[in-house]
Image 1: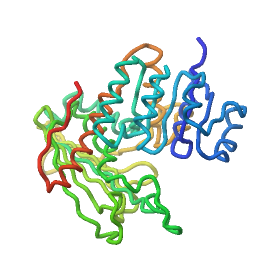
Image 2 (image 1 turned 90 degrees about the vertical axis):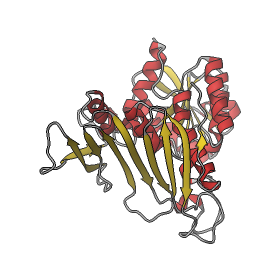
Image 3 (image 1 turned 60 degrees about the horizontal axis):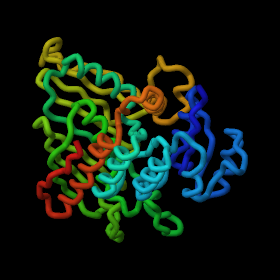
Length: 362
């Protein structure tokens, strides 16, 4: 069996994915695409690529002889590029999120169904080691029936919204904070095995950057959601709030207890807490638990990607689905279920906090 030929578009954002896929024994890096020729020139020697395998035009790249296209471009291009890759006969691994509009989300699902090719959203936070361990705990019923979850991703990136020296707008500037919701909703909905059906939201205004009028500089957005199973989920998102180091936080409540990671992340890990009513008491309270992003039992090549060992395990699932003709964990429908609630919650916030239905695609 020959190696799968993979091409990458968007090299600055997708560097970790390039390394993770290159480390997979079934994969050969066969083409690179980026607007900047110097980036292509710098990376090409790492993979032994000649000039004819380097592209600055996406249309030329997507029609090259490839099995897989990895998309790590700005989100506004994700839907169109994913659809073009699927329709050109490629399998697609696309950075999160699917798109910025519900119509584009629906179009990606339709392209996946029409072509029969594999589409997976690269939501790597679902593959943090502690999230994978929590999935085992939830599957054993240790938390009982889950009924509430919350998550936050507070990551100050004001310099990625507008160049601090020149004032030049960057591609994230028009992005409402809660549109970038898969890092929060992805792990939570995976753990709960649920999907969102209704959403509302609230925005905290622009106190941090009152001179700015764009969506990206909104101080904070909160989303509140009702799920198909009757559960409640809350998420918190900011791109400008001063929190250093940044916060990636999850908590789950069930009829037998709760689990949460710590808000203070150091060296890719935090100290969380876990309580189980069957084995612990109110007097002793919850026990501290380690919440690492890295699986220390994974092989050395698992660290070639980024975000702990998450991208290694994510890539394994993607390649296995292609090889075995099976469904990927985060296909287009599931990816939209991680994406669409944030789009709807922002719209609800702009309407003053009304409740809106979230479109369903299965």
